[in-house]
Image (cartoon, rainbow, N blue to C red):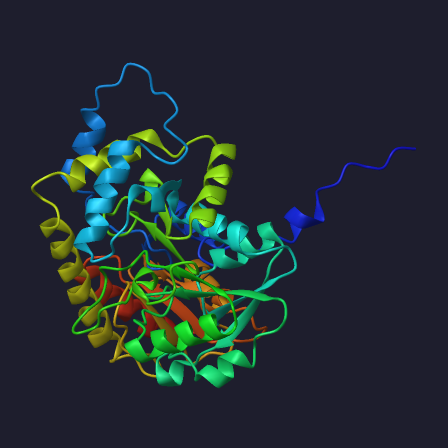
Length: 401
């Protein structure tokens, strides 16, 4: 008798996205005519720049053929110009275009870590890192950070206590998704010493580079002295150009072996998206760059300030002031935030409206941590964010666990 067909345990054990897994509940509410305010996902509502879209619409293409696995040459040249503007000097040999920042992250895991090795990541962290680890057979060893001190990195000795003979890399997201933290020069120096003194790679997710408010300015790992062979940068246009669907990311390193190895991985998926690349290079070579990005960041800073102001009026919430990105981790006066999020979608209505949040527990690797937290994305206009705070307050007042 043959064995029955079965789904692989590797796939069955793959983690659900805490950001998207409750979408069916939101869809059901919408089918009932409920307006759902989405602050669960980092999907900007700001229009993609016109020059980006023009580059797609006016592309003179007869055959939409494969692009080079590394990316179209003129796109790489435009990107090196962008990075130079950001004071990150790169040649096109040190850069490749990827299918979104997610593929860049996956390639970074594959090129720097063996199966069974460990990677240090401050928690809470971007949920897809768990997926990258699962796909590559890598274990995440979380670096604990706390809401009470705004998710600051611990001291060097505390981080090094987590290093084992299996540790191969440290990953920082700067500015951070989901906390909005911009690491200080002191924290970056601590991470650099840990990496150098323990012979590790440093993977730096810099997708939210421009999203820094006030005096905060993130430091790129590629600008750290003595890290030329150790630093790998993950990047994406999804947020800064409000172009999530374009699926254009980048991977960069001054380590020639890393880039050559990543290119082999790129060849296995053939090519990154052609149309998104054409939109990007048209925007980067237009007169609207970089002013349009600067204007967008200013809008997000105002949105942050609006959300914080109105959440301060909600009893029982605990949160800090994020310095970057467009996320806020909030502790709720409930034991199970996911249950509250579900209840808001299934039971709570105020004038036919409700709100969808991302349960915080899914951003942690340590069991039980973040159970009372939610992540909010301030990707909506300021009027809608005021309403979001209002709905959360009214929901908490009615909720019974």
